[in-house]
Image (cartoon, rainbow, N blue to C red):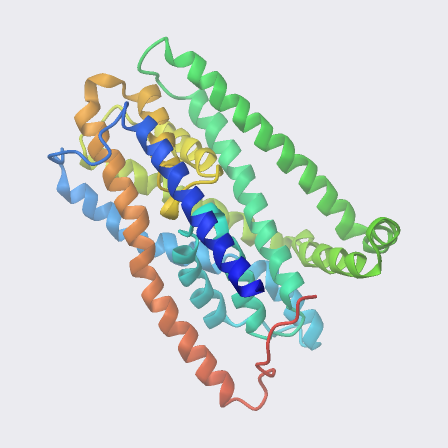
Length: 354
């Protein structure tokens, strides 16, 4: 009976996601052609540069989480030189980008499960969830910076765009407020985990208190500049590559009015848009974000080039992560095989939930 209910809930989620995607795509289609009849591509070599950037984009995005997890492994193993498995970091990271294409952000749970399944010292599911949450929090803060910095230095297509600018700034302000409160709570929790544990114990019980304290200690390692600074710098590098990739696609489509400031704001607007529950592969929400950015910075006079730009960016983001997931699967398989033959490796039982 439970299996039947679970199956019907899954079917309902997929139906809702497809309905939502169709609704967003319908609205976006009034502003851009979802797939243009003929691609506007005056500089195809620039598209080649953007495609080549998919490799460093994927690798940097995958590896930066090691700076959150390395302190946990070193502390739990008693060996300050021991680090989280690089194969597991890269393998889970590359595959997780593909899983994130599932509707309603259901893929967000996959990487913590994969990291916990590696049975690294000091990293069970709670720590893995905390590490991924910290990564998402820093990304949110960078998106806010890209939004306000990009909008401040951008040229707009029309005066009518100002209302849309204000709406984007309002969404960015809300995200900034949530991120700021989250950072303050995490810093307080990392510096006083016992006090946090007592407070959660009174509210939610001992089990939840233990989970919150262990999540807080995951963040505590980043208070050390030797871990926190590289984590921040590599995250900035990842987002710089992301902006550069979009800028090169814009160049390929002949959108010369879309400079680096406009590219940064476009990335932020898309990032805000895809936070809404959407269809598989962010279909619908991605196009809405892109249509909003094109209305701000390009205008209707470049609709063909803008539609080509939106379609190519979506194709690159979707098929790019699919291609990079293949080596991720291989890396994970090699890592699991090496662990089975390594007597010093932790046991490979099912990951604990807390």
